[in-house]
Amino acid sequence: MRLLLVEDDAVLARSVRKSLEQAGYAVDVAGDGIHAEYLGDEGVYALAVLDLGLPQRGGLEVLAHWRANGNSLPVIVLTARDAWYEKVEGFKAGADDYLAKPFHVEELIARITALVHRSNRHCGGVLRVGGLELDEQRQVVVKQSGETVELTGIEFRLLRCFLLNPDRILSKAQLVDHVYDFDSDKESNVIEVYVNHLRRKLGKACIETRRGQGYRFRTDDQ
Image (cartoon, rainbow, N blue to C red; front, side):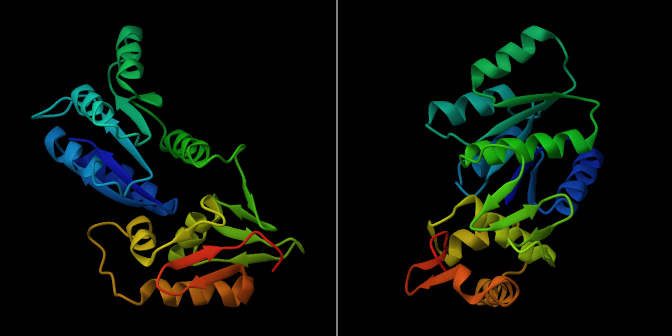
């Protein structure tokens, strides 16, 4: 899944981005409120981590603009401010969760995972779909037989996207947007290559090709 990290502290942004990428997320970074607001309206992100103390346009204003424009992007507000009334203002502006600095990145990742699951109507902390269980911490998948299958980084990102959207047709463009960040080189056939990798590991029938439309992860009888 692709995340938007909005943080003007370059050192912190690099550190958090690295940790999120290690956790299997593609991450774009914005260092000011105007750029953040523009990116957040692109419709390619599963979630935004939004600092409040931003140059050019404050985080609360960015969030308020998103919500006023009907943008329902899930948002975790990240700030050094710890006054209770500022948290209330964040929730009133449309925040979904709140984390005060300093924080442990493990907690941020856990909150991101939980919010992504809820936003995609998955209850609980484990993705279990179509006889598969995705271990997001170890980045492996467990089959119904109990066999554990190792995944590469791209395979993990792609499979998580499918499991969060079971039985939904996803175009190649949608999958590319969720698997890669802006800085990555994207070849036109890369999704097809990794879909075939997953089929070899999990079974050919698990991912259906819809010609001219994209791919569908099947939860019906395979």
